Image (cartoon, rainbow, N blue to C red; front, side, top):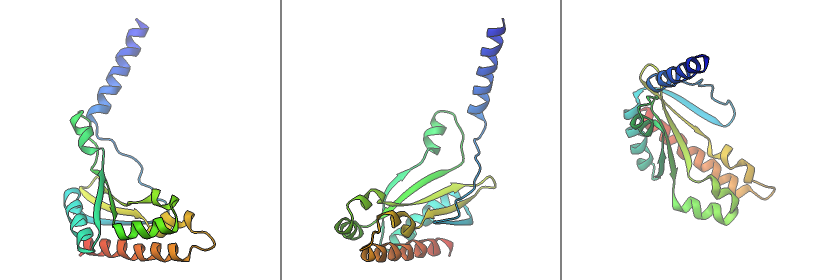
Length: 161
């Protein structure tokens, strides 16, 4: 009987997890991250971000997020989407300077839904992401990273308007 009680308890906890929205601690790293709270809803922020990416001459090249797949399994989690942004001319230049650095492309924005229904836009700055690949002669790669910092900041500024 004791085993049956344990099994019943495990099944009950699992069922509770499936119907309870999952929430995690949101402590963003201090170094290398930009985090911007918004009053926009999650879907609105996604739309605004995609429009801003295009307006700044960049491209959304990847999108990934667990929210919709989890919902199809009956698990409710806050909106969560990673949007990979890049452009081919940057890719060609980075490859010319550092083949290993291309593992970091596309550089990503992260859109997360908050408990109050608003959404947050965050990203690792391109200069932070590319820093490990900048060696002694890495001034050109550093300049590209700084230029991408400006592009990503401009995208975020457009979103905030």
